[in-house]
View 1 (cartoon, rainbow, N blue to C red):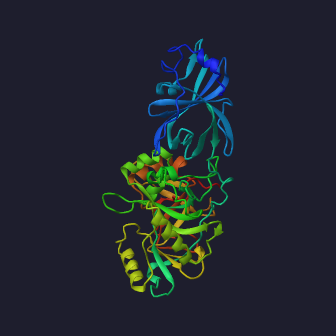
View 2 (view 1 turned 45 degrees about the vertical axis):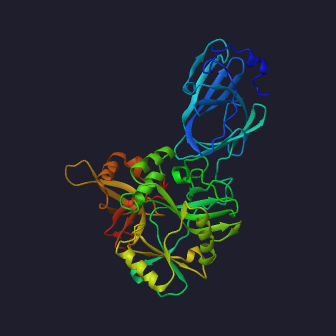
View 3 (view 1 turned 90 degrees about the vertical axis):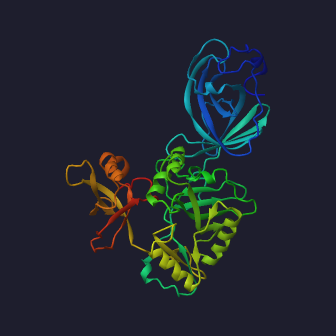
Length: 470
């Protein structure tokens, strides 16, 4: 029996209890086949009779299904707490806060949180849902029925601590100009270098496919930046039960539905650096995000980063054939096909990318033995300060930069490649949105001093969503 006794329930005067319909009920949770977005509320109830507790409410088919959490808190990652299902409430009551007078529920109600949530699974015995209360953090919970009206609320949030298998780095590839690349070199596979955001993809049999930034977050308590639920096509996407657990490397990118061209990497970064529902809203005006896989970090518990690429390619091709929402970049192995790919890339004919090609060794080496064949050289720099545009217009002219790894040591400046909107934002929100961030620049070359020759701004780097600390 739940913490609310049967006698307490029978003592309720119908129609008098705030938020409870005329005929009180504790309804079985319905089964809903597909994931859905709905409203969630967390109310702190300082009840005269039942004591202080949390009331968690989910709007499912127009009914506020409700659970009392006696501890008056939510469990931390890996923890679980009792949650007793209580009377169904009207959905309007989910936004209530104030004082309830004498009778059922007497006491003060504070609205701790009200907003959108994703319900990923919904059955009479289990509800799996996400909370997106702050910034880019994703809190993951399971409600599991035990006996009677008693449930357990489990926090299954992914963290750096409970998911140490997620790498916090990406390999450093060698680089050279695409003009110096030789398609006749045997044993090489050339694939399109997708121009988006480098990510880590977690695949587990029968579980949600999840996408993370490889970078550690200093702002999220979990230490992770979970991008999964910003990508609508991935929400609720489960890996086949016969796929071995794997950690993959991928690129999140978007394609303009009007032109078929990939959107700019900086636009991908702007989406992924937003909170979950803002990210989805931004895609309505730009393009749906997609996920391309290109490397295997581990599979079935075996470290794969140093394995020949042919071993990884077989795994990736099998996975993508089983999960159509995942894809591989276009690749070529034969000499003539590689030459044609290089020519098309230099001519700007590849819609997925204008950045270049990655050359992989099929029979030897590993991820660190791959080479980027760049159309133009690009450089990562740290934004240090801004300067104004010449003339009377209230715009920034650009920014001064330091080299990555040497923050505070101004090396040069860049004043081209910015949109009008970006120049306005630099001027108005420099400290908040730009200072200390890593930017991607293109340049003809680099002087011995470290300064770049003829640099042009490309984007804020999507792989560095937070400012670099000195």
